[in-house]
Amino acid sequence: MSFRPLIAVCGTTGVGKSQLAIDLALYLKNKFHGENGWKGARIINSDAMQVYAGLDVLTNKMPESEQAGVEHLLMGFKHPGEQYVVGQWVKDAMTAVTTMHARKEIPIVVGGTSYWLQHLLFSDRLLHKGVEGTAPQADDGLQHAINSLPHNLRDLYDNLSERELPASADLPENAFAMHELLNALDPAMAARWHWKDTRKVLRSLCIVKESGRRPSEILREQARTASLSRYDSLCFWVHADRDVLNERLCMRVDKMLEQGLLDEVRTLMALAKEDADEDASTSSSGADQSKEFTSSIYQSIGYREFHGYLSTLTGHPDASDKKYQEAAENMKISTRQYARRQVSWIRNKLIPAIQLDAESWAANVRDPAVRITSDFLCGRPMESPLSSDTARELLTVKSLPSKYVLCPL
Image (cartoon, rainbow, N blue to C red):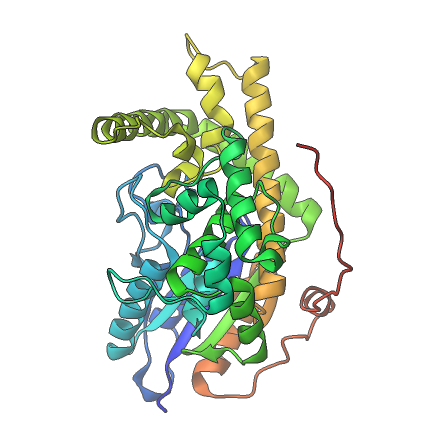
């Protein structure tokens, strides 16, 4: 099989993934002279929020002036509010990779949505719907569970594809009903998710409906089979110590506020109102306000946190105002929590080839990344992914005991 190289850069928000991708692209364009004619690179965005046009501060896009002329694909091409999910992105990214390989260019995939990157690098991990217009045949046990559903849960199941994701904070009864439905159809999967984790609960239910199988059974099958790599991949994990990263993230939020974050939140609030008015005009049940923080670009950190503050504001924003400060602090907390979730996903789902420490950029990140990339593309021996103490610690999957938590309703 021919050599099909792909370089991926992953890591938490705020560690400099985009800068490393640009540094590598410039090296491949200006200094690399490899075998088989490989020369030059373009960047493919794998951040779920940065696919949307505009709102550059809210979505943390790298300014064009800092992109050093490197072309970025799949960035800023979707209308805010439009749904764009992992399967669509993987298809578009694969098309871009094929085009680049035909031109002897190296694809560099970078972004914070590690779930997307995982499904690009490894095939046979995404579930596909059955033939359009038909429902897959469930096995006897699952079909019996579906037929035994009480009326309210059967109605919920039958209309899954027509329902928006309920926001558990606003409509907890919807979120709890979805979890109750999942527990009736796949108790093992329901035990994995808290009832407030509406996105994962809904995705599990959609897998049942789209595939006619319990997602827990599919996961067990996948665990028994090796992942098939689509490409000859080199993956860099850019990492920073938690204390260093937390301080950097707080400074980043402050900078975003200085750069006009609240103006973009207002723009998004106006867009949400337009979408709600349009939904109300076409739906007999009126607008569904519950999707406002749970779909497409409305999930961006900063939108939910400042929505309440701006909704009641009568004058100009005042950084000394207590509610402003509370919103800013909530945004910083959400950003830190998101970074921790990203680390957890990378460690458990996306084991990378080389881990890099972002605290000293040139010596610890750019230079070793350039050296490793050259070795990779030229077929030279490469150093062990576990060559540093930090890498050995981070790339060790820890086995934790199960913990059950009883949550009062």
